[in-house]
Image 1 (tube, helix red, strand yellow):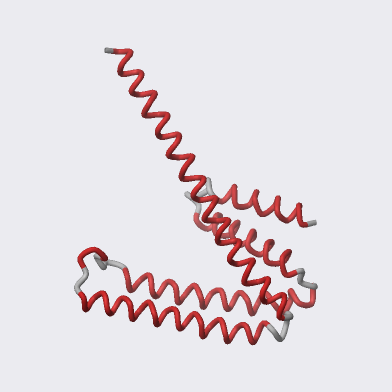
Image 2 (tube, rainbow, N blue to C red):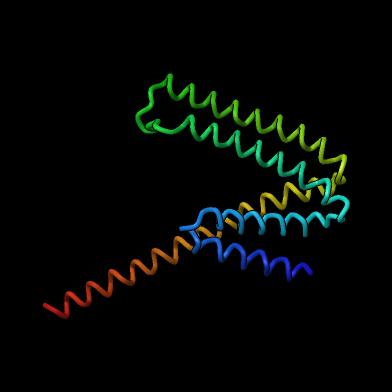
Length: 165
């Protein structure tokens, strides 16, 4: 069962990466992979899953909102040429965002522990971290492959130009 879920997860992520021109599809595939990983890692019963996912989805949406608010506060700021006052404000905004995330995590951890046990909650945190690391790793691999292809194309062009001269 674990091998099937892992295979499904990798296939889903693999199909996400090339589909960058369709952000809705990519987001849906990523979300499906995340759900598969969390469900497998937590070993949720059907009864737990029915109660778990609405709470978790609400938590994830609120966490996303906090992250978006912080990112939006950074837009248009030239990090290299900030004044000391701007740097101080940016640091304060960062600390406030982190505190909001911590408060949110505490609140939802309490709610989730009414549905899942503490071991499952710890497994959830690990699954989230593992999923994030896996996505970053896959994106890095994709970037390296693109750089390699670009390098090969440049080398071909160089050879063609040398052959024409």
